[in-house]
Length: 291
Image 1 (spheres, rainbow, N blue to C red):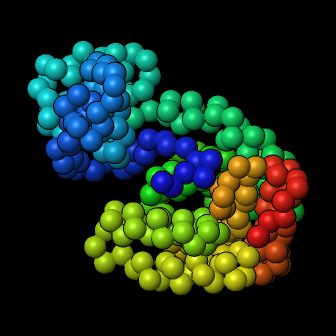
Image 2 (image 1 turned 45 degrees about the vertical axis):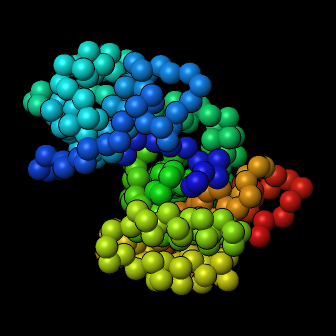
């Protein structure tokens, strides 16, 4: 549902040590789940894909017993599959040997997808130009299910800047990029997004505030809002359309840091960011004007 030339990538694990994840028991897939029934069945493949999903969703490392419980299978059923997935680089054993975590391989494979490759090819020259002008980092974000994902970044060579790792995920409703991605969807798609966002959001999430911010971004053509992650940083976001996208397919984000001797105001940065985003859109669909 949240695909506008976006890709599904595993959620990267945190570098901080946390308590073991609590993973709910999953509904079984394939032949054992009528909601996913298909004409053909490949039990081994289904088992492997299910394990990748469980490990990716865990966020940090997850033990074999927890994977088995989440999949509704025995430890012996999944042992060999874990070894195969590890040997192919889709999951990796933690250094202490107590659990598994997702690698970046799915992200790397997803980046080879033609729409994403085209988007990166069009965006990176403009991102470099904007980063050089502002002496700030610039990121490229796409939707991935109910989250946003960073798929490209350019760091300033002239100054220090704030960057996030490629493949970084955050829920759409908890991100400024998510507000812009939502803002520039057609009304019927916004209703679809809202239905799923309400279903997956944590209790107490301010959905109404999210929508109000998105409406303001739509009116302005960009979003200027304090970072939801780092104090003292202002996120500047602007939408990008691609050749086949119905709504906004991606957005540029500049995490603006106030640096002594650099006098760019947020409004000016927003105009520059939107201009760069529009030039990217024009490369990707030259005969259709941005919204």
